[in-house]
Amino acid sequence: MIKILLADDQALLRSTFRMLIDSCDDMTVVAEAADGEAAAGLARQHRPDLVLMDIRMPVLDGLAATRRICSTPELAGTRVLILTTFETDEYVARALEAGASGFLGKDVTSEGLLAGIRTVVGGEALLSPAATRTLIDRFLSGPGSHDELPGGSLATLTDREREITALAAHGLSNQEIAERLVVSPLTVRTHIHRAMMKVGARDRAQLVVAAYQQGLVRVR
Image (cartoon, rainbow, N blue to C red; front, side, top):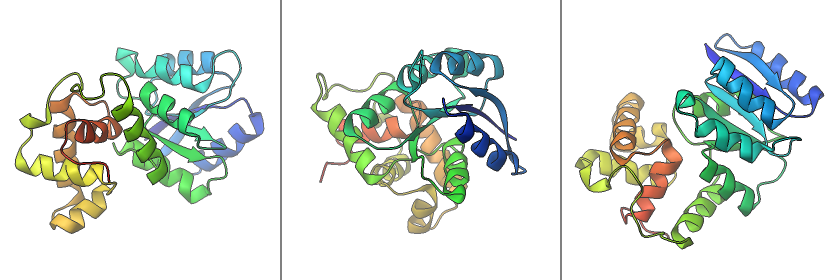
């Protein structure tokens, strides 16, 4: 069962999301927060698999709450999925740097929301092409952008892990990589996970950054 924490200052929106999520057999809402401070506290209390986080909230905004949650060791297994009405470069970069695993627009369909939750909990990043490019540009153009990411080098990866990491960096999903390489999605997921462990990446988004940062793939 996927445990979800809802963080949004709009009670009506939280209620709508709760009804949708609780209608599924494989997920449930364990808590709701109307501000970022409460979200961070409830995350520590309930240790959800995923926090559905609004950016603009009182007391503590969603970006700061995301950073607090993702920097808490005991919440290493918790993923943050950002809800936003617009995907500006600054918000995308800051949220991903804070540790968010992806974005969904507040106008997302019911099917899109549920699929997005399962995608992120399954270990994949939920990033549009625009968000991915923003992420890459931000890291590559920033101070020390050519330094290696903390934790490890891509040189430690096997040939297969490097191949799959490169495909992930080009935006392919596990299913798409599996079809291209004629292997199972589970095999792809295993290689991605091993690559993340070796590089020291928290999630797929950080692994993608490492692939560009260390020259495994190039910005087109």
